[in-house]
Amino acid sequence: MWSKKQDRTRRGKKTAYVCLIICLTFALLLSILFSVSVGVAGGNLKILFHTLASRDHSSELGRIILEMRMPRALAACFTGAAFALSGAVMQGVTRNPLADAGLLGINAGAGFLVALSAVAFPPIPAVGTMFLAFTGAAGAVILVYSIGMGKHKTGSIRLILAGSAVSALLTALSQGISLTFGLSKELSFWTAGSLSGITWSQLVIAVPWIAAAGTASLFLGERISMLALGEASAAGLGINVLLVKLLGIGTVLIMAGASVSLGGGISFLGLIVPHSVRLIVGADYRRILPVSALMGAILLVLADVAARMLYAPFDTPVGALVSAIGVPIFMGLTWQKKGAAL
Image (cartoon, rainbow, N blue to C red; front, side, top):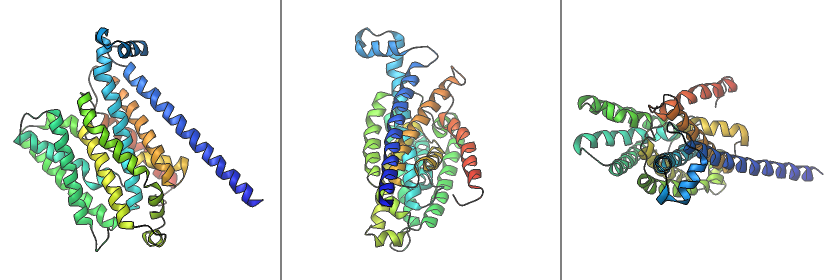
């Protein structure tokens, strides 16, 4: 009798989860269509479909939709999913609910190398900037992880402290370079996070990396859930703790590094989305990771629409807007816990 009741409860939760995934996927598609249909120049879905059907006879507005709004909407989709997913993986791997990609110094490392290259190799094309940003992010992660390594394993607290120290150092160096050489204006939008000017060629470079690392991270969900029981318990269940951490941090590096190189530093997305998702689906990372990716994509696509239209025709950095949204949400989540450990 009790077993049958448990089975019904399990089936009900599984059905609810599948419905949630379908609804979020549908909402993401609608948000992308809404994004490409809204702008200062106007537009609608009819123009979009006509442009896709006959690109040789498209109107000027159709070309704007296809060459400017569509890459930007897709960039928001993939970077939003990557930031949220990388934040969820970091929180699971480090067992620190306040962790996100910025913990590894990814944003700071990318910003430092971009600032340095702007001085040493001006002018540099957008594709070159992407590769340099990714290289800087990778270098910062290697430095943080080297400092945060304990004896034969990583300590979460030590990793957090190392990430904070490296991020502070690289951010200070970047600001020093920008002020000394008068690059503050050129780097401000990139530092604050902006999807303005994204092109198809940039997407072709960044999206495959994000998609591959994101897919790989989803397969770590079960092992990350076991890590939540404690490293000793996970090891007792046959989990190679060090390997899972290395794989998790590797996928975070690729996802967040590629996203930062595409749209700059966008804070709080990887922090607030996983917290919100846990309230909906529970503590199982097999469910947290996919839902976080979809919710992060939806949030950034809609935030980018707001960034474009808030002070149109001027562009507001979407990173600043996400931070403005994220701070009160995070404070609300903290208040809901009433001082308990998040």
